[in-house]
Image 1 (cartoon, rainbow, N blue to C red):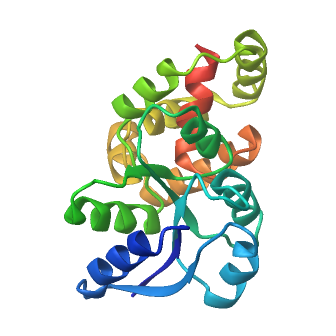
Image 2 (tube, rainbow, N blue to C red):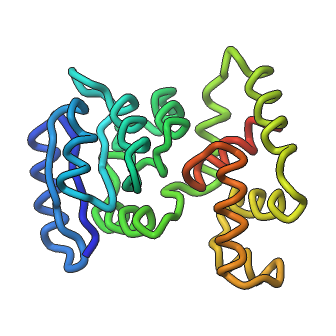
Length: 214
């Protein structure tokens, strides 16, 4: 079973998600919160695999809560719930460690698929959607971001850089293994090392970093 934590200040949204997920055999709602405050503690007690996190809440916002969750030991994946796909807060949430985002009007089957993908360690948005989102948001510190990203990428070996590029293109570990003639276990080992070098915690952040370096 995939355990899901719902964090949204709108009770109707939580009810709709709870009802929808209740009809899926491999998903279970492990808990709910109406504010980002205390979510890290709730994660520790409810032990979810995935958190569906609203961004704009009147108390502690979703970005702050996402960062706190991702700093937890063995953190769950965080999927951002948002109304718009070109909000600068979405990009900030991705940088804070969110695995991706889903729009609140996304069809139920796609939300379920996103939860399953996130629980499996996969990004919850296509590379094209990610690129479009990042391009929409102009960073005032673009030159600094590029310099910092290139410095981090410079610490990678050629093999690690190839794997990072494949990740940014949306490839799965199995696909990368086939393209580079490696075992899946070897790809996972390289992935663990390169994420440590890049100081990121998930595949989506790898994609963001490669974009920053361009």
